[in-house]
Image (cartoon, rainbow, N blue to C red):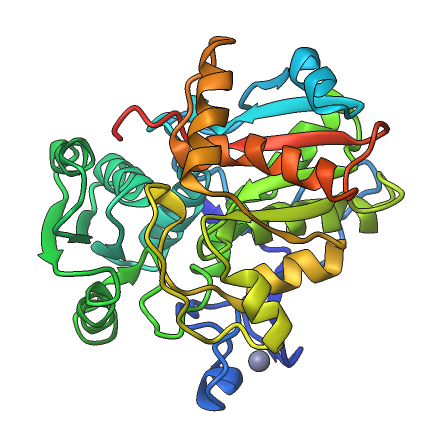
Length: 368
Ligand SMILES: [Zn+2]
């Protein structure tokens, strides 16, 4: 495990200022001071040889529990039913703790070790908390996880089995000051956002999602559209970074459009306002993509790729969940929402008979 010597710096996605490689859990310091939390994007020096075409990552030989290389299943029947060209299910549920978060945890917890941290603090009542707890256990680090009181018992138990220390709070936003205090004053390494308005998770962690783009390209060629269940947008942005690398290295001719699925209008309203800062609360059973906030990185991933936000009701997500189950694929509700989003995008003409679409099956909901 070592830092990638090619990692040359970080660039703000909002003001484009450059920063030396280091830990910036609160994003760009300049934009934060100006009241606009903004993520940083890793930059790398070119490879030493032309034959090195691997996607660069911040930590080389990271701690691993076997994450990544997940199945990408073709679903021709669903493609026919939806009236699109091709449909694929990228099954992130196949990761070690059952969600895409393991890719981020592998890079983030490895970085925490290299930075000399002994504990990782995070606000999560779901997949991120379980994943960070597992990777911290593997690394021998303490995981401090702030959960909400309505955290499902199975999520709570999973974190505890991995040895995490849990602290329960009344609601989602109430967790962030606790995590902020641990990170700012008690030497904890930040495993999730803790700002309000929020910023993306540590950029080294988000980089962990980039190989998803390569894996999709390797199994089904370049898709036209990718549909991503989205809350704070780490996965959406990380996948975008992967495709951006493939574009810049000449391996694809154009970016796929990245569409963000949400249970109620957050991103569409933020996009209309031209400002990701705001609180758009709603009630939903789509647990993993709930919450009233969104982030600049989500807006950027959509605008730079030509994608759009898609609202999916709980009822539509439940119907999609049943359709997937009837063909043997189990998903959590917020993952099934991606299939419901296909129907909406087809009806509105964003997708057509030529579209080649990948759905991000973020988790199978085994702890729902
Ligand atoms: Zn900035």
